[in-house]
Amino acid sequence: MKKTLKIFGIGLFIFIVLFFLIGAFLPKKYHVERSIVIAQPDNVVYQYLTNFNNFNNWSPWHDVEPNIKYKIEGKEDTIGSRYSWEGNKTGEGYMQITQLTPFKLIEQKLVFKKPMEDQAMASFVLSQENNKTKLTWNMDGENKTTLSRWFCTIMNMDKMIGKDYEKGLHRLKQQLEK
Image (cartoon, helix red, strand yellow):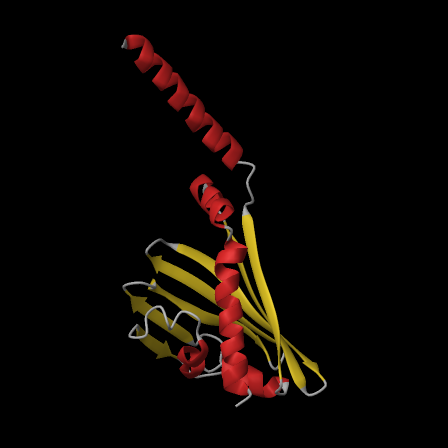
């Protein structure tokens, strides 16, 4: 019995050491990026995206929780405007516009409060192509803890978030090309 406990203790110790040792070498940052071409000029796409009143029309997460509680603060198309949400399935947080370059770039800070606290940056990069707009949606985040590095490696953030981005971009395209 003592020998079994000793072997178990040594095994657990080795597992914990390996968990943290390997975790130190896992990616500290993640990046998700998806693009689509929308048959509208860049000013139309830009104005639609900078108005949070349009977000639920194309949001890939609206299906998950259609009755989500949300609040929009600030004037559309301005730095500082904010979309806050609170839901049972989607958690709680907000996105806030931090940078605008008309018809070229919209940058947002994402703050997640529940189910776990975290932050990321998202951006929409627009480029005009023959009266159409190539729109690229990005998200960049940092894995600050060993646990978050393991989570992002196992769950593969690009695949997990990327499918939502693809769905959202297709919905956005449908909305704007009506």
